[in-house]
Length: 246
View 1 (cartoon, rainbow, N blue to C red):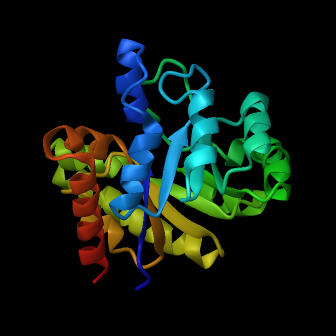
View 2 (view 1 turned 135 degrees about the horizontal axis):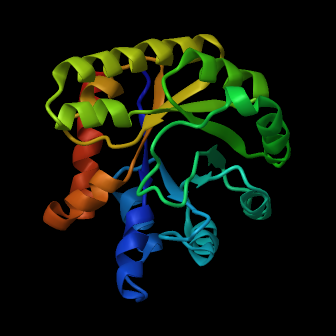
View 3 (view 1 turned 135 degrees about the vertical axis):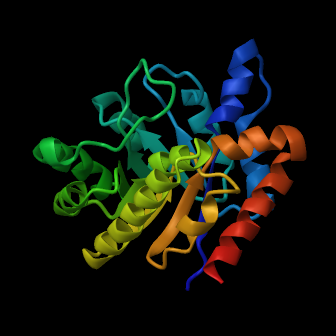
C-alpha cells in the first residue's frame, strides 16, 4: 500500500497560548517541529469565534510553512473570503456550532447540496483542494462527490469514543462502517482521509484501510506532548501508521 500521509492539527497549541493571552506556545513553531518529526501536512481550523487559531496564525503559517496547509473552516462567506485571500493547499469544510467543545459530527451535505456546490466552486477555481468532513454515510459521500469535492474526510470520533469507553460492539460496528465507506468513497473517485479522536491505541485499524490516503490528528498529539514531547509523539504516531500499512 502507498504510504499514509499524516496531517498534524496544531489548533490546541493555540488553545494553550490563548488560556493565558500570551505569545506562546507558538503554533508556527509547533508546525515546524511537526515537519521535523515526519508530518506531511499541517491542519488548522479557524473557527468563527477564534477560540484557538487566529487570523494572524493563518497569516504566519502561510508565510512560514514548507508543508501544505489544510485550512479547516465553516461554510460561511467570511471563511470563504479568508480562504480565497490565502489560497491554502487544501480547505476542509466542517460543521461548526459555537456551543460545541469540538466538532461533533460530519457535515450535512445531502440536505445542503446546492448551497455547498456553489460555495466550494470559487475555492476550486482558486486552486484549493476541497475536502468535506463527513460521517461514514453513503448518502453524504454521494452528495460530496456530486458537488465536486476532491476529498472526503471520514469522522472517526464515534469509533474512538466507543473504544475508550469500553464498548467493543459499538467500536467494531463503527470501524466496519468506516472501512466500508472508505472503499465506497474510493469507488466514486474521491480521495479518502480520516480523522477525529485518533490515538496510539485506535490509529492502527483505521490506518490499515487500503483506500485511505491521509489521517489528520491533533488533540491527542498535543496532549501526549506534555508527557513525551511533540516530536517523539508525532514520530510514534508515524511509526504506528506505517506498521499498520505494512
